[in-house]
Image 1 (cartoon, rainbow, N blue to C red):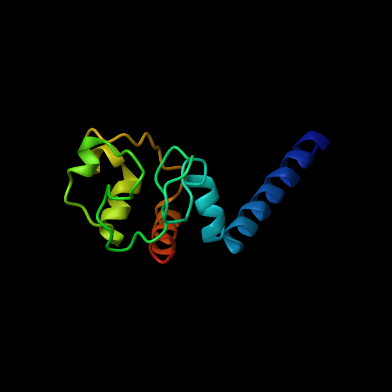
Image 2 (spheres, rainbow, N blue to C red):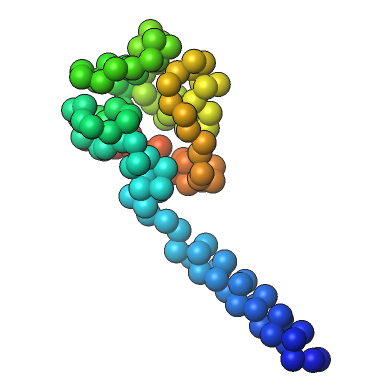
Length: 125
């Protein structure tokens, strides 16, 4: 085998090991939050300077009710309560879940990561 092919083979093997390491060490829920949510949201309960409303205390909270945050008409007039099914639908495709809402979001996570993130978000105080 010539040296170029040998280097390619070694590179492919190393890439395989890197993928196995990633699978063996999945991202934590906090890391998933940082990737998918933290640019626009905090985990507190009060409105702040972020683009989106705070995500603390989501479980069973009606959508669009955090005082001090201006929600879209679509979200504030919806009858949604945050639960695992509604949050998963929202994270999968917000505009399909509640058309004409103001959240512009494309989920960068896998389905498994989204499930873990949603479970974790619903447990945050």
